[in-house]
Length: 399
Image 1 (cartoon, helix red, strand yellow):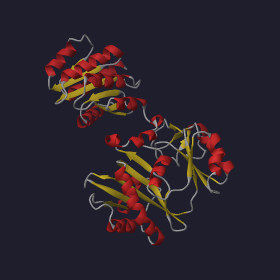
Image 2 (cartoon, rainbow, N blue to C red):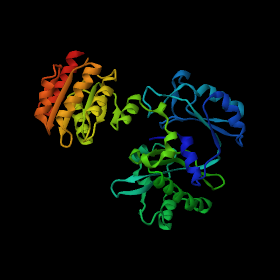
Image 3 (tube, rainbow, N blue to C red):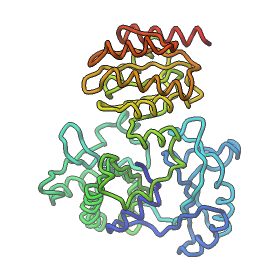
Image 4 (cartoon, rainbow, N blue to C red):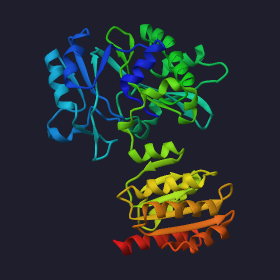
């Protein structure tokens, strides 16, 4: 689960992290009061969407010469003017794609005198199985570009889960970020705070970009991005109100109700598969034969008939889907259960696009018999290669 910047900062502030004063608003009528509640005279008006690159983004409705999604304002009147322009309009960034995202809330924040911009994030390093700090002196930039162009400027510090953040760890981070004096002292307080927030709240990512050194030498969290591990959500009822459904794909929301792993993509062939590895292979072979997958959908190893039915309905609800490939290897999952779920879904929602089904594994004969005797127009496939070629050809023929 992702949350907005203002929510992430409020959470980090509870742990004692240094953040600027700010107010989230949901309508332009709230802008004046929000600005007047802050020290000023410099304000920052920030679009709140679940995507990076907001500052360089452009609003669809405002033309190419308009300011981006993060703006400086030098008066209360300027804050109000920017709020009226930004709220309700569609911000397009590198991460949103051409469709963009509608800005439904803004964060009005007190300005800061910036001396240096740094990068600091925490994530789980799969190579070491440790929560690790990833830091760089190149803050405020696209970290992927830094990694590509100057990888030596990115330093990773793994944290021992038993010892926690030690003095030696802090010294490494301070050195990597070239912090000294007051900023180094602030780092001694901040880095353990970030680690505690990350571990206690079961985050999968905590990114501060930029972490700034101000003109007075103090550190401040200028921007914050937080993602939580959905597998740990049962431990954190307090985080559920932070979820913003307007930022999520409607099909992904529906999938989450049935504990389905679903991600919408840009292609036209819907995929229903069991197992993440098999799903990735299915998407790859669809691309190999010249088409594009419309989704990643993993029904899991022990899906019920109802779960399979829900998955099929979610796929068919996407108007971009021009064909469906069901690719199941039955281990724990039984092929007859998949077949029954597909038939139930087709009878409920109809079948308007080609459907290819490849079944293998537990109860495969029973599953194929159920499909063969269903009276449905189902194209059977013997293996993954055969299935991919058949669905790509069927979609091309129907076009």
